[in-house]
Length: 393
Image (cartoon, rainbow, N blue to C red):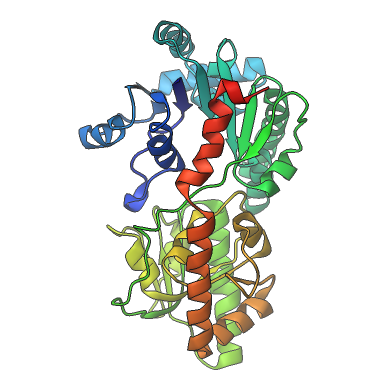
């Protein structure tokens, strides 16, 4: 079967050498379908990146964004009532090109990744699947809570537009997917028209492995895009709330590693003799391997946190907020540790740091959990079934 994938970012590479969800899905889908990839990118991918993705695609078409295209797209979004993010990636000529190419190539099914690319699918006659990934409207609301005026007003405005659009799109596609059941609940979509499937992320357990050689020089650490608001909020909580409370309770300061792309000025300001901020590493695994515990006090994020799966695959014990644990589906005190406030985070950190056998047990169970539950092959097969027109009634 021939499938076309429409996405808003070239699927290789992501920061630090790991890959996007779509790259792993491409590898699996290409085993069962002929894949045609269409993407809108701020810059053209390198020859090496194109070569990597070309192994799994019959054809790749990249539209390079321009400021003029974005401006025109925003105007179109205002006129149509779309979210602003959908306008930023929209190009009317590219939409016409896609329709023509799909007909000529005999495309059977179309996978649209994220609602921002949905305008390209509105006039397609093929079987269409929309991957929401996350409840983006809810995410925008949470981002507004972390922002100050005028960004708070802008995020709230976009949140309302996104939520309306998420609902409207549910009856325009033949099948739908989302990463977690929590996001499916938040979306609250009508299911009479199109089936909704939970298609979780996966983890490459041949790449993210337990290291027996690296010295764990840091008591705790946090990994992620350090310019992303929910992650900045987590780091702020870690440094301003957890660190002083731990020092008061335990009598010493924690050695903390903060590792991730594009650290904000606030995150950089936390750098000290006890807090190391690393903005770039060639291999993100080295950051995980240098910490005894990954601590993720994320209270404003949505979806599935890949950093949690990566840490667990590397055998690093995880302490996180309830929403993060829910997104992963792991059990408190079995595969990870859940904490809701400063006192619980401090207590869990002190317990795990003082009990190496408990850390080892948590490490082994976390690794087993990821191996058994987060296979790209297994999870992407659900997406493949949605794309298969014979399987949709």
